[in-house]
Image (cartoon, rainbow, N blue to C red; front, side, top):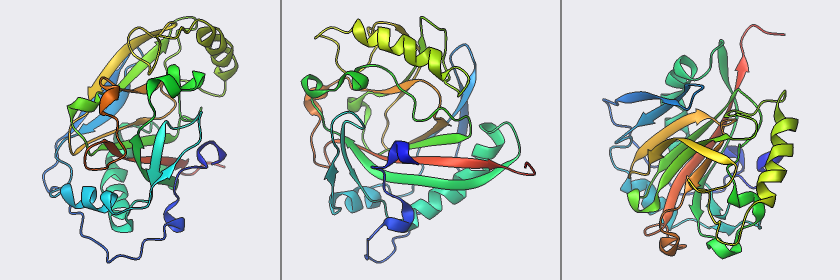
Length: 255
């Protein structure tokens, strides 16, 4: 959990507002897409909440925290408890069915509202190349877009030097060594990762779309794509607002 110490744990949320409904659309179309040569599965679900503006309203009233350089390039705030319960309950079955290859149950999780706000000139080196969230095959990232296609989307990558698309404990050392060489090749013009980032090939892409949810295993190399950095603002109603989850799945029946 130390990799994401800036995320907001559900049991640490301090909201005392009445619990909103955050009703999930009754007839969801859950699309399964493949990422890259590895055909890593990803869930894409549009029109997730019946009233997503309720969640945006909550974000606009929340207390936001600027994060230090080097990690997530922006701000975070706590998610409402009712929404967290609803999204995890609804997606648990599809995640275990489509993303986790072995029998598993939901374990620990972390979650927050997030807004990318850092300008390209202020990015740290690590923020200029694709990344993973953690080198664990059983952690799933869930991303709920509460902004539109103006803000790009999420792209997935292959590291050219190694051919890696997913990073595990077994290949992490080789990946890290190659990443150091990749970072050394960066020039001033390289900002948020994109198709021109040296050392990486973009393999898949999902557009931002208001009220779209995507879910994928977070050991897959990826990055938020920022097509219009001038549009990055700290207003949840106008900026690149998302709700983010990292969910660990524990083996069932193992030692």
